[in-house]
Length: 189
Image (tube, rainbow, N blue to C red):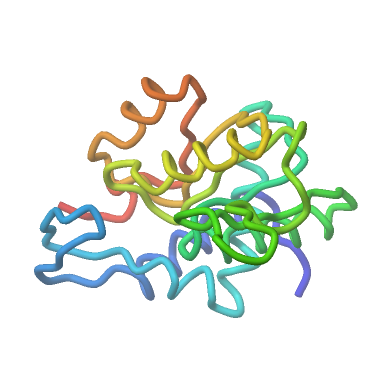
């Protein structure tokens, strides 16, 4: 599959998110909050067509914002396929960006790491997430990456639910919070 231009990739990804990922009905989110809909982005990040678009759109989002970084990832498991997609999109563009995974807690066995993959120590990092409600997953990832010596340059999510995650993350960490799509673009609420 050849890459689409940035606008076409973004438009097609939005179409796929609306078609495949938006589930209506009462649901309890990972934050414990209740919502009238759920945006199941694993239906996108693990989809044969959409995952390629995720990588392309997220890379373009970060490039447009002028964020320079060497590696990208976040809290397992929502961020895992986002980081992999971005890594592959960068590779398709002739760039070398690694991916990493942050565990919820440091391992007590093996090498005892919380951040897995190529090292983040001394490297410029982007923390990724598929979607964010309270910002808790991204904040846990930022803490783990900083503890491992990474320099967090930004947080980037596919869909922002507009529930305060951006404000909380920016206030608590001092890094910009970027998103590819707002909940309004998905026609929610």
